[in-house]
Length: 79
Image (cartoon, rainbow, N blue to C red; front, top):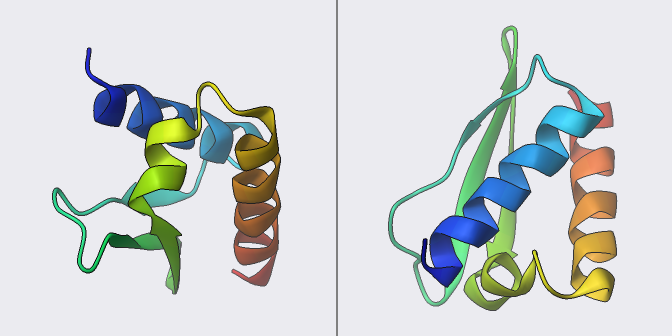
């Protein structure tokens, strides 16, 4: 598994840990090194941007994991 796949799996694991009923759509390619990620719960949808580097470093860097987790907690709470 490459860095991107590991990061994507970790991202999905974090989302499932916060709320397993949230659907996530991650684009296959970033735009300007940023991913516009869709979070959907029922009829509510929220978009967040996460840098390509943050996704790649997510499994290995505790600081980045904490930052992304906080962003996800805020976004999912707003759903």
